Length: 388
Image 1 (cartoon, one colour):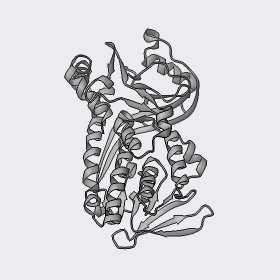
Image 2: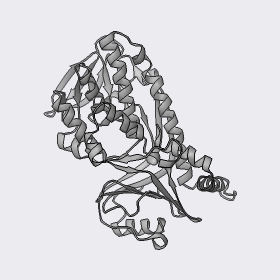
Image 3: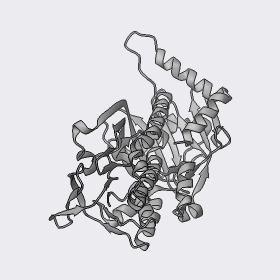
Image 4: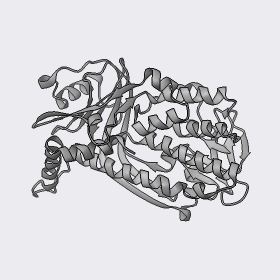
C-alpha cells in the first residue's frame, strides 16, 4: 500500500494499516520539519476525538487538548452566545493545533516501524485500473523513481498527483465558488474571548478562533484578488477592532502576525472517490470551505473508513467494505458541504442587484434571529456544527 501525503488523513491511515499488519509506505513532498510545524486547522469534532481514542492515537490530544463548547455572534442587533455543547447532540469541539496532532501521529507511525519518504513528490499514479498500479515520484535530488503497490491512497490534497491522475471521464466534478474571500491570520496573541467569535458587520465578516493560550486565529473578509501582504498590521488590527465591535464588547489582545493567507471560499466534490486501485481521501476527495471547520475531521473519518475496507479486503478477502468506501464517505461529505454552505450564507451579506430590494439580506437577518431565539434552530445548529 502506498499513501501519498503525511497529513492527518495519510498518517491516520498509515497507523491503522500498520496495526492491522498491512505493509504500507507514505510518500511526502515536504521535509520532516515542515510536516511537523505547518500550521493548519485546530478544531476537532467529537467524532474525530472518538476515532483517535478508539485506536490509541489520542495521547497528546488527551494531555493538551482544550474543550470548547461556546460560540458568540456579534451583529448590529447585539451579541448572543450559544453553548452548543449543551444543545443538539451535546458534543463539544476539542481545540488541538493540527501540527501537534500530525507530530503525534508521525511519532507513532515511525515508532511502530512505519516507512515514510520525505522530500519525495508524487508526480503521477499510473495503471490504477489494472492489477499493478504504480506511483512515479521526483526524489529530493531531482531523480525520477517509481513505487508499486496493490492500492494507492491519495491523501495529498486537491492539487496532488492522486486527484490529477484520475481520468476526467472517470469522475464527476461538482464545484461551487462562493464569491467570498477571507484574509486568514495567525497572531502571537492570547485569545480575546472565551468562545469562537463570529462578527457580522457592514464592512464584512470577522472571525476569532483560539488555537492555544498564546496563539489566536483570525479571519477578515476581504475583496477578491486581495494579496495577503497588502494590509499593514495596524490596518488588520483596526479592522478587527471595528468589525468585532471592540469598543462595545472589550479590546482585542494584539500581537505579531506570524502567518497570512488569502482564502477564496470554494467547495468541490469528486464522485466517486475511487478509480480502480486509487482512493481519494481528505482534500483530494473534496474541498470544503473553512466556515465550519470540517476539512480535517472529514479526512480522519475517511481514513478510518478506508482502513477498515482495506483490512477486510487484504486480510480477510472480503471487498464489501472497500467497495462501499466512496458511498459511505460521500454521505458525510455532502452533509458537511450543506452546513458549510449554510454558514457562508449566515456570515456574509449577499449584495442585491442595483435598484432591487435586499431580499437575501433580509433572509439572512431572519436566520440570525431564529438562531438567537429558537431552541429548535439552536439544536439543529449544534448538531451540524460539531457533527460530521
